[in-house]
Length: 344
Image (tube, rainbow, N blue to C red):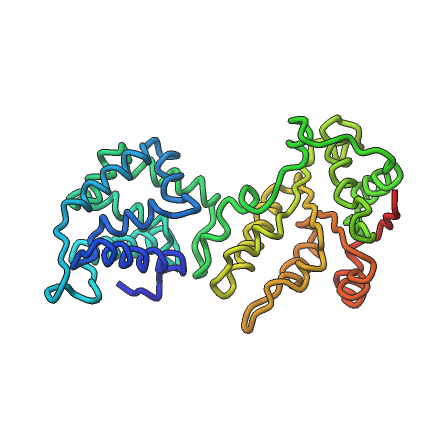
């Protein structure tokens, strides 16, 4: 078992399993400690996969807690300061590595850890998952659906899963659900935006105006028109998705994790084959975001996607920020068409 072949998140869960063992005064890290760490995940990936595979996540939690309660607690002079992995856990990690390699993954991801636990039926954790109705073939299918055909080729691979669902809001669906208010007095700007989107080249509008003038409202107005079918045929079946910069950046603590998340969003947009238009509010933040030593910044991820026509987007920024970040970069400037937004 090579720990360097595990993703950052998978290693994080193994550290969490150690924390669980220490918290409960247990002497070794058993598979049920690893399962407990997976089930306590704030993002709920393991629980979501169990449900998607037809299992009962609440039952898995109850079975795991009951199993952990049976492990003797040792404290005082006889306790180990740092519990290590027991033999069953070592075998589970070996299984996870083998499963990942067989699937063509370069790294062992969180969901492979869960699958390895299911594939270890003689362990207490394996029995807990079986009691919760989880089967390996159903879990494998759920993993395939989550990944969308991707392999894990980096230490931040999990950041790309369900990226649009996690990091963007579907404005067209919100319009259909009656969650967007009508936009008054912006017909000219919306018409100009539609006109640019329908072109073959330089078809990415960027809304330029001072903070608070209503740039986001123009995107929402476009979403309402798409939902009502009041757009040219080329735009009628499009989805307008608003990128959530806060969610994209929040919690990205590992080097390159921000870029992995953005790459996941761009891959899903590319996979939609032109059916998704991405609205990027405060676009200047994205172009300069994610810059850490040794990591690619977001602007360099956007440029090739824009150049190849894989990313169709609407940006929004202020005039000063446009001049500072977009005008000075010819590769970006020739992909965007300004739409100036004055006060209503």
